[in-house]
Length: 316
Image (tube, rainbow, N blue to C red; front, side, top):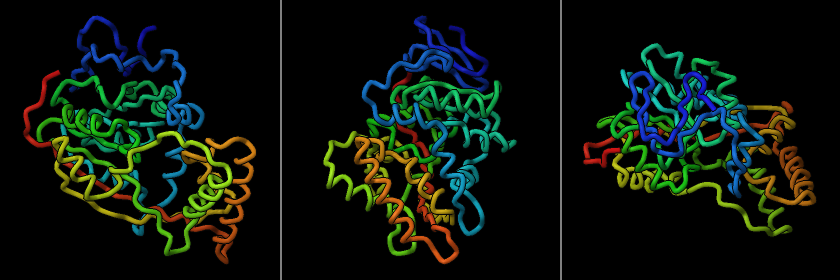
C-alpha cells in the first residue's frame, strides 16, 4: 500500500527517505504507513484501549487551565524553543499538540509519531493531508542519530515501555543541545476538593471486592522528580526545567464521570464489577459536588525540559 502525503512507509530496502529537514531511516522496521491495516493489540492493554478511545487524552486535558488560563498543552508549546530543525511529537495521539505547535511560525517542521493506528487516523483527520505522521515504536525511532531538534511528549513518557530504552532512543535522535519538552502528570491532590481521588478510591474498593490481575500500563518512575532526573541523566539528558503547575476545571458531575471513566483501568473489570465501580464513582463524585453544582477537577502537572548532552552516540 502506498504512503499518503506526509507519512513514512517502511520498506525492506534499507533506504532513507526525507521529510523537510529530517532524514528517515527506512530499515528501522517499526515505521509503517498509517494507511496500513493495524494488527491486533496482541495483549497490550494500552494499545487496545487507544484502539477504542482515540482522542480521549486531548478531550480530557484540553479543559483544565492554570491561573493564567493556559492548558497543559499551551504550557508545553510555550516551553518549546525556537529551532530551525524538526520537532517530533512522541505518542502524538490525535494530533492536538501538533496542531498547536504548527501555529508557531518559528517551528517549521513538526512531525507526529505514535504506535497506535487509530490515534494516527484521528490525527490525520484533524491535521489534514499536510500533517507529517509516522507510525513507529518509541524504542526504535526511524530517525537518523542527532537529526531532531526537539522532542515533545504530553502525558506520554510514562507509557513508553521499556522506559529506559525509549529515553535512550529519544536522546540518540536528538541533536547535541536538542531539547526534550514534556508534560507529565503530577500527584493527585487529596487535600482540596477534587474529583480525581474519587476514581482512585472507587477503583480500590472495587478491586478489593473483585480481585483481578491488572495489566502493565506505565512506568511510575518517571513521575517522581528525583528519579526522573536520574533516568534522564542516564539516557544523556540533563533537566533544565522542572515546573509544577496546578490546573483546574469545574464541571458537571456527569461530565466529570465521563472524564474519569476515560482513563486507563475501569474497563479491566468484568461487566458486573464495572457496574459496581460506576455506582461507587457516581456516589463519590456527588459527595464532591460543590454548592454551585459543579465538581472541581484539579490536575497537577510537571513541565519538564531536558537538554541533550554531547556524549558519543551510536550512529544509525
